[in-house]
Length: 153
Image 1 (cartoon, helix red, strand yellow):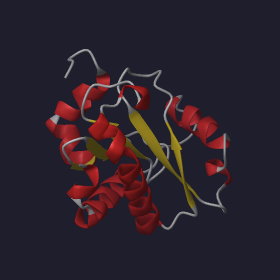
Image 2 (cartoon, rainbow, N blue to C red):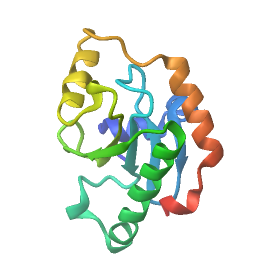
Image 3 (cartoon, one colour):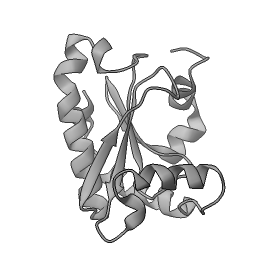
Image 4 (spheres, rainbow, N blue to C red):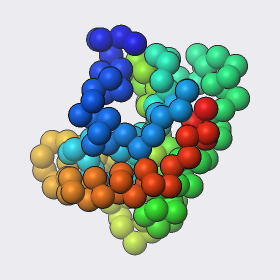
């Protein structure tokens, strides 16, 4: 872990673990986007190892990646009833893989395709209200009850 890496700092922060972490296996960590979160259910699937992306996975990470993404996406869809889950990773904000798993609701135009990025930027800039922190905590607690660690190993 690198103390300079913002993702590593989140992984090591007891307060972030308590509030937003859903679970961790030996390879992956599933957490909710911290407050201010653009949407309730905006999850992040992080590599525990300091690795920039799939091109740098070792064999074990490469073999388990698809299962972890599928499991986390299905868990999100089941828990909040979204129509689809977008999976986006840019790798520009930190040199540590964190895959955004974003709920898409057909009836909510804020969550459609690239508009979800505009919504994210507007919340980050303080132009739109973030998701209510108590709703994030409620969802994290609900999902923790359903979480199975073996899918992140």
